[in-house]
Amino acid sequence: HYHDAVVYKTFMKSKGAAPDTTLDQALALIRRIHDYSGGLHQVVYLVGWQFDGHDSKYPDWSEVGPQCRSSLSDDPLTSLRLAMQEARKYNADLSLHVNMNDAYTNAPSWKTYEANDLFCRQKDGGIVRGGQWGGEWSYRISHVKEFRKGFAQKRILGLLEMLPDLKRSGTIHIDALFGQKSDYEGVSALDDFRAIVDIVDFWHAQGVDVTTEFLGRRDQVGVFPMCYHL
Image (cartoon, rainbow, N blue to C red):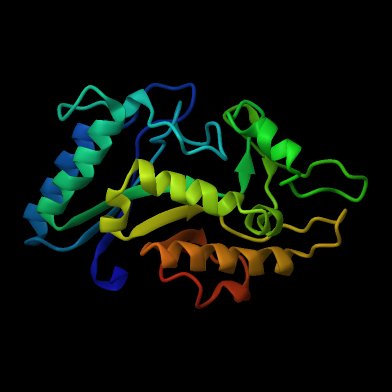
């Protein structure tokens, strides 16, 4: 119930930079809000929890970065799992900020995505480039191809297997989730967004809500229960 909760992001780390917020500090904030508000429900998304931080090595979600070490455990994965459990003591669902649009050439799965042609392509067949974040160019994943070929489902299930407490939290925040045309195949942005709806339905089938950054199109109305920017 996002409408009667405190919903916010905690920014942990940008790639190539020192950590902004430790996991211990994030839990301290959760405790303070719990105490100040009389136990109001919180929904908290950690940004920059993976690899070297925010916008690093997408599309992969397979590694919890060293920035997640805490007093709970020196092992980042164990620490994050324990933090999710600790947050529930304060009526807080601790979850993650992830991205399903972008891929980087230094990602562990880049060659796999390239070999299976999972990118949006220009009319001449070149891969559609996204933004430049932290000095690295991102490239746009085709939601149509990623879902039809089963790779979207594979990375969702992999994340939930690595962090089963995400199902207890019941929510995930997906950065900038919007359709992208792929002229080479004649796929429109609306076609791509319809595949996003299939991806959201797959998250739902695992017991997880999908929230996102903004409403970019009217088609998105009714798909996401909460967004940051209207």
